Image (cartoon, rainbow, N blue to C red):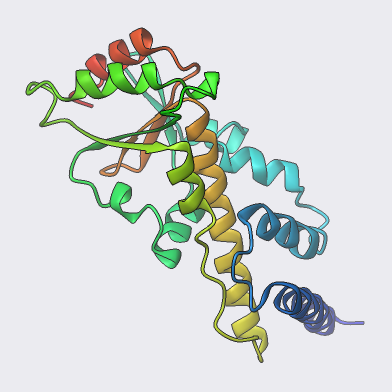
Length: 230
C-alpha cells in the first residue's frame, strides 16, 4: 500500500467520521443551534486527534491554555511578569464566530474578567469588580486600558452563542472547514473560560496576555499599574 493511497484512505475515513458526527449533532440539536463549546471540543478531539496517533488531546489543551512547553518557548516577559502568547486558534475562533472580537480589536490593553453582582458566587465576588473598575476609571489609566467586565449571566449568554453551519457539509473540503471552525470556537471559548476564573490582561497589539493567579484586587491593581506601558 503506497503512501498516496494511505493518505487518501485516511482522508476518506476522516470525512466519513466527520460527516457521521455532524449528522448526529444536527439531528439532535437542529443544525447545531445551541451546541455548547465543550461539545465541539469533545467531538473534535474524538474525531481528529485519534486519527493522528502522534498528537495527544491533553497536549493540545495545554497549548491552548499556554501551559505547555511550546508556549513557554514562545512566551516573553515584562518587568518579571510572564507574557503568554494567545494561540492563533483562539483568534481565528473569535473572528470566525464574531465573538469577543471587540477585545481583539481594542485600541488599548483589555482587562477581562467575570463577576457575580448578586454576591452568591464567592469566587466571583462583586468586590473585585468594584475595586478594579474604580481603579481603571482614574484618568491616568484611561490611555492604557479598556475594561471588559461581564456578569456571570452575561458571560454565559456569550459562551452559548456559537453559530453552527447553516447546512450539512457535502464535500471533504467543506467538512474540514466546518470542523476547523468548530474546533477554533471551542479553543476560543476555553481560553475565555480560563480567564473568567480570575482575570486576564490582553494586549491586542502583540497578541500576548497575562492571566492573574488569583482574584485579589490589591494584587491586580499592582499588576495593572506595572503594566501600564507594556
